Amino acid sequence: MFKVGDLAVYPAYGVGRIVSIEEKVISGEKRTFYVVEILKKGMKVMVPKNNADQKGLRDIVSRKKANEVFGVLKERNVKINNQNWTKRFKEYQDKIKTGQIYEIAEVLRDIHILGMKKDLSYGEKKILETARELLVQELAIALSKSEEDIRKKIQKCLSDHNS
Image (tube, rainbow, N blue to C red; front, side, top):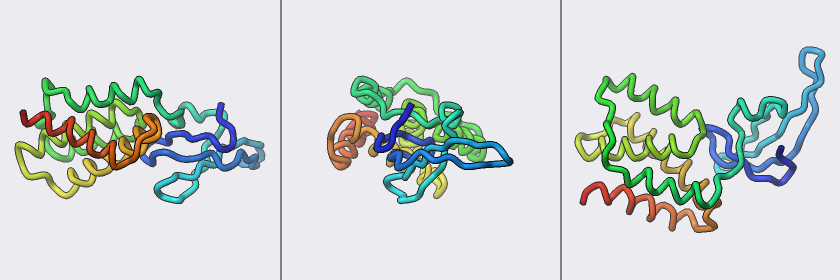
């Protein structure tokens, strides 16, 4: 699936580079792992090769999918979850943990819309920033643009909600 040097997305951590493929003996069983260095965090994670899919390790999205994310961010006819903050927080975290770019875009959009109606809590602001950074990083790579250009485009999509 992946080879050394490939870029991949690991859920909730963002984009990483496959720096090695290693074999380890665990509980008497030989297993193969992708060693992924998360670019923004400088940390390494080991992902079992045989179930990398279930762990959510995936390729960077295509240009087409990347451009579709901006449509998700511009959507206005969305129902914001008005349940209590704890349930909303868990729902947002679960979406981010999927590592799926559309889900992350929905979290960013929904919290942004919520922030236009009320002051966001510290936790909401943290999730908003996490979702934004995960999107910026992957979209910049997928679209061969600078992270600053992507940040501006995301902000423009979100600002269009005000019109």
